[in-house]
Every structure is written in structure tokens, then in C-alpha cells.
Length: 185
Length: 185
DNA sequence: AGCTTAAAGCTAACGTCATTAGCTGAGGAG
DNA sequence: CTCCTCAGCTAATGACGTTAGCTTTAAGCT
Image (cartoon, rainbow over all chains, first blue to last red; front, side, top):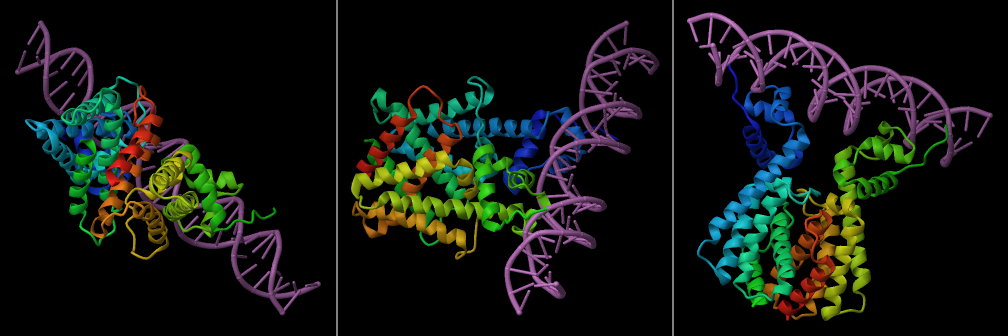
């Protein structure tokens, strides 16, 4: 029997993909093992537990989200930066609902582990957006939390099917970005 | 052996309390049964499955949240109504994180079941807040979704420990309400 | 090439948990 | 007082995460 050639990253990637497809709450060791052509116990050579896999997916997702934000924000400022960041955030949650769900749920953490660091990079990207608006330093944290709340709230409600049909969600998103832009100026 | 005298509502209430205490994801039939002084299989006389219990807790939570909002909004309008609604929303999630978590997670639903109806009442209360601002009818849905996103996002991030220490979350919340008030006028 | 060795993957087994089947006795209706 | 419904119980099943211990791959060294 030939080896599968796995490592922690491969297991994490398979778990992340599966979470996006079937939902984070339905992510199990058995399904991940199936997908990798391996038996469940083999995964424990690369990952210490299902909780550990969750944590790794959370780090992966946060890192990817941060990368996407940095990518999309290059060369933009003002409304353009705001719109780009909002779109990138929402788009990531739409494309990777399972990954994003992994980052939620009380992942309280030591202040300097990998997840916290990845999260900081996301926040720094959002802070860059705000800097273009010339927010007073004392208010920057508040504005950052507001921005994050709005984006996180909109994206998760949309991904969870929370917006009833009837009015186009696309229009609501555009309106939200406009609202934030006006308020920040 | 005397009877416990349970019914669906009692089981749901016990489950909701337990979810608030230990977290929605750690809610299990065994723990609920323990709390009620009963064996796990007995619960199935009142609830068809763990998923059914989840759904019932979601309905309970949404109904309670709607009641709280209506209660707190009596006689208020403008900023006062906005502040009251925001506080009520945030306070409910803080006091009942397990219950609120039950309402999340892809509870896509037939358009006229009990959960959808309870959710509509919550939305109607938020719509009342907006009406005090004289939003154009065409924008009302967008403003409603924005308001809900902001409150939901802030409350869930706070409940999940998402805001790093350093700056007072209380101040950020006040700032958020102010931001929304300014933007809606 | 042959030898050694860390570890990748496997089978077997265990514990926990949700759920089902089928029994028993409590307690309200007559 | 009797009957019968059904609340709650015990026993059993199946799914799943996890551990223990074995086998064998394949990389590194001589």
C-alpha cells in the first residue's frame, strides 16, 4: 500500500474544503479521511484532534482573508478602498462559508498565537481603509470595530440565509457601503 | 417513581438555559436530561430530536428577543429608540449567548413557520426605530438590513470574545449608536 | 546496493452520544 | 374502582472521535 503523502497543511486544506461544501458543523474526521483516501486514525499523525483541525482551519481562513484584503486594497483609498474591502470581505464569506464559520465561535485565544496574529493582519487592513478618511486617533478603534461589525454582520447574515427574499441583497450591500462612506466622512 | 411532569416547553427551557451556560455547541441530550432529573430517552416523548430542540430554542430566543425589543421601545423615538433597541439587542445576546447562537447557523426555513414569524416581529421592531428617522420607503429595507447587520455583528463579535482588550467595548458601542444615528438623519 | 530508523498508515478496540424498541407503571377519565 | 393513555425507563444499536499497538514505507547513511 503506497503512502498518501499527507501533512498538516493537506489535512487542513481538505477539512476547509469540506467545511465549505457541507457546512462547518457537519465537518467530521471520517469525511476528511475519506476525501484524502485514508482511514480516520491516520489523520491523528498530522492533527491532534478535531478541535485542533478546527483551529487550523480558522488560522487558514483568517490568513486567506487577510491576504485577499491586502491584495484588493492595493493602490486604493477613500470610498474605493472601502468598497473593495467590503466586497472582498463579503466575497470571501460567500465563497468560503465553512472556513469563515471556523473563525467564529468563541475562539478566545492567547494574545500571541497564530490565529490572533492572522486576525490582527485583517484588522490592520481595515484600519488602512479608515486611515483614508482621517479619523481622529481616539476614535479609530471605535470606527474599526464598527466597520468590522457591519461587514461581519452583513456577511454572516447573508451566508446564513438570514435575509428574506423580496429585495435584492446586492442593492442592500451597495447601500451599506454608501452609508458607511457618508458616515465616515 | 414519581413523574417529572415535563412537556416540550420545559425541555426547551432547560435546553436554552444549558446552552447559555455551557455554549450552544456543547448542548447535548444527556446534559438536558440530567438537568431535568430524567433519562435521555425520555426527552424524545417531548422533542423529536436534538435538531428539533435546537429549532425550538431558536424560536424561543427569537420570540424573547422580539418581546424585549417591543418592551424597551415603548414610548421612544429617534435616537432614544435607536439606543434602546441597540442596548436591548446587545444585552440579550450578552445574557443569552447560547439562545442567540441557536438562531444562527443556516436555519433556512419555510416562509411561514414559527421561527420565520418570530423573526419578522424582531424586524418589525427595528423597522419602527427607522420609521422615526423618516427613511424613504425605497431605502427602508436597505436601512433595516444595515441596522440589523451592525447590531448582529457587534453583539456576536463581542459575545465571541472577538474584540481584543485595550479599549473599552462600552465606548465603542456608544460610538456605534452615535454613528448610526448621524448616518440615518 | 544494503541497513537502519522515524513515522505514515492500518486494524482493532473503547467511550461517548443520539436515537430506537419495547416494557412498566402513574394517574386522569369513566 | 377500573381502564387506558402515555411519561419515563432499561436495553440495544449505530455513528463518531479517539487511543493502542502493529506493519511497512521510504528517506538517510554507510
